[in-house]
Image 1 (cartoon, rainbow, N blue to C red):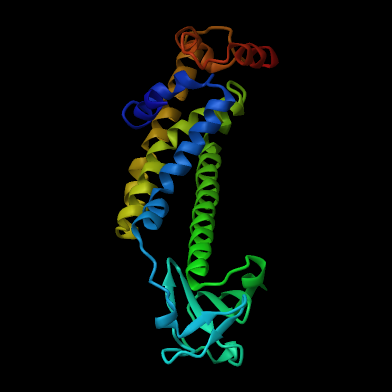
Image 2 (cartoon, rainbow, N blue to C red):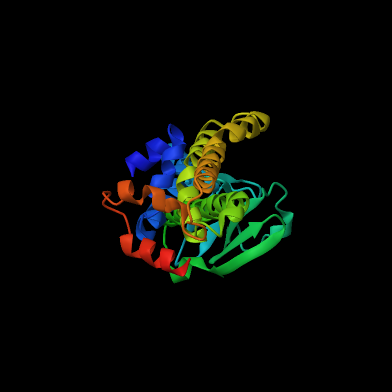
Amino acid sequence: MFEVFTNSIVFPKNLINYHNKKGGFVFLYILFLVVLMSLATIVFFISHKPQAITEVNTGCTIVDNYLVCTGENYNINNRFDMYDFDIHFLSDTDDIANVTNRDVFTIILQGSLLTVFVGDNEVNSFNFLQTYDINSLEEVTSILKNSVITAGIFIGLISNTFIIVFIILISTIPFMRFRQLISYKKIFKMLTFAATPMAFLFAIYNLVNFDTIIFFILMLFAYRSVFILQREIQFRVINRSSGGSNTQGKDVSNETEDNSSQMEDDDSDESENDDQEK
């Protein structure tokens, strides 16, 4: 995998040698790119410490799986930060509509109910305290912390999966003219490896959060691997045609099979089947 990663950045024309990598390897490589792009999310959750939530600063306590807010520090507009969520603790006599400082992502605990809002829309509400048999704010903090971290990382991985797969699929469009000479499956494999610089750029951008204009300028350079791979395939097609060889309809990648067959992950049976189909 390290060899593929290095070639995709330094020697992208060598990516044509990996057209026979097995599907399992390609899947793992996509997963690697997704994790690379999600580093910023993982670092955020590791480095960020949520605000302390106690009976003193909330003015609330839990009695028999029920939130009671009678302390002197209680205020309906008290809010506590937990990563990208704001948490509010409300007395059962208060109206949620009276909370004036709600953020985009808000969690409200009132009575035994926990309600999640996105903007003004209620996403979910359930009997939180009784379901988990919670009797202290420390337990509330621990469960919410673990839930937000798990959901945040999962959402980050899913969104980055869609991004990288979309980039790969869009990149295949200029290669469609080679469909008569090379299978789409092999094009997809090579472009998965060629997407490495773009995934790496996303990882840096998410970590550093530099200017968006600079990001798009650098994306043009990151797309270099795709351009070079396209040029390499076109060069081999032209050479084959100019040589007058009667090989039309066969896979261009056959030229590299003798070299790539020595690699551990070559799928020689798959290559033979593709040639027969052509």
